[in-house]
Length: 253
Image 1 (cartoon, helix red, strand yellow):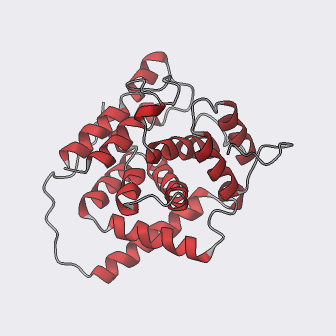
Image 2 (tube, one colour):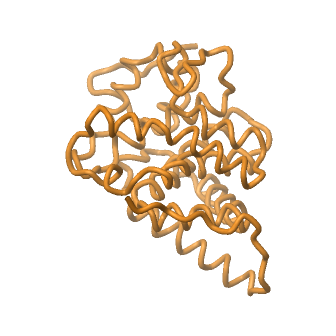
Image 3 (cartoon, one colour):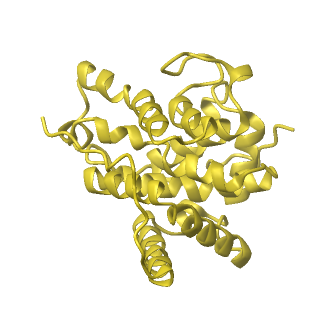
């Protein structure tokens, strides 16, 4: 099986025109938005010009970091879905974290962008399989949170960023993986990551299924509310202003 080579552990910052790099990253961000869709998925999330500028500027600042840039480019070359999904998760997640007045948004933003970096250790033929995975293949995919943790540790990212990659498939009721941790051991940034990760995965097209509508994806999250933080879910749904069909505006406060 083909295996993705990691970029060099030690990355030397070459002299370059920073303005040119910024413009390149701005183009990357806008291209990602065209791939990720429209109001049908983001709802009201990016309608405020100040919020849009905040997300765009923070994306550029984070990805100017050579390690972040190299890893994201590696992910993009390995599997484009995971790359665009990671940007999607960043956009939603960072705005919810900002609404909760979380500290260290640049660090948390890097954690959102790199949460799926472990996918570069999963064979392409599994990630791009056009039908349902076998049990063995699913077990292989379930390795990616720990693989991501190991990669980010290797590159000397903070514990907070590494833990976001490791724990984003955990669930509050202990039914997640890899360690079946529960709510008391899951910080708010990971609680938010869990929600926007599932929403993104459900509403983006995959080789084996069409995208789910945004209202239906919200219904899935509500149905599994024992697995997700209800305050974070309430905040996310109200920020995007998308709710399940024929459902009153939820409030868990």
